[in-house]
Image 1 (cartoon, rainbow, N blue to C red):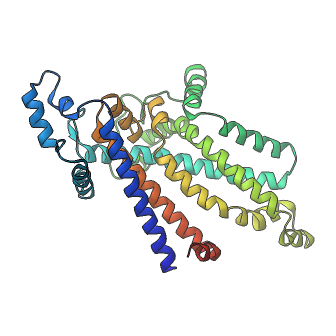
Image 2 (image 1 turned 120 degrees about the vertical axis):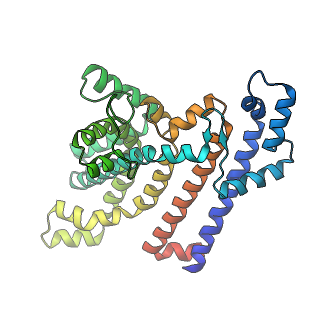
Image 3 (image 1 turned 135 degrees about the horizontal axis):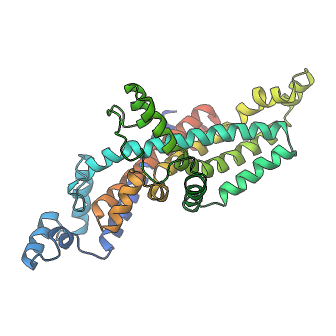
Length: 338
């Protein structure tokens, strides 16, 4: 297990280093002069040269890269010229909003996928099984950006049953006192039930938009597992002992079918944390996705570069933890890896 852990951690570090080099190189190749952007449109050439020297843009590429990595590890992620704040402070402020919507979407998707897979095992080849397959096809074939616009038109503009692109709370509603940054939890802690209900209503549309794609992947994977394991001897023995079809699916088949979803769930969660950019833009959600979108429009490269680094670190960390968890569950994975 120790060698398995070292191999996974070492390969994860190599991935982060490789991603950071590629990101740093391409960010330096983009058009636009950061020194000119920071100094201002009407700055003199002398002032721009001073700014370039302060940013270290005249140094060799490798020296700029090592300086940036060293500063990033120490918590100095640069300064955002568009917002006039340190990049790290902006990420810390925006992270709870992204995490809240991501956790909401993952919980919703996992719950729906488990129910859908169980229904498939119980109604194999039936109408309900067909409905589950159809929903997975819809989820895989629907772009979250387009789906977000569609649900806004239906539920906000036409039916007027859910809030529109207002962010995390209705206009005029004060945020709850900050404890975790998650409005659902913070409003519960503060006993502000009206704020909690308002926050939940604002989570539904963007959360469901993100959850649909996750659900589609998970339910297809779980459905295949259920249809495979339902024919295994242990399931047939359970049926022969008089256990009902639903009981066999829930108690004997589903625990085995959930195993592949552990790996998929980890990867999807990592991807979700770094791919909420479009959905946050559609719903005006004040998370990291919208922060990066604004930074791209303002050519604020320090924010974009930090986002790439954070994305790589999150993806690698979740992948390594998922591999370790899978190795604990299935010893054959450890043997093959070593």
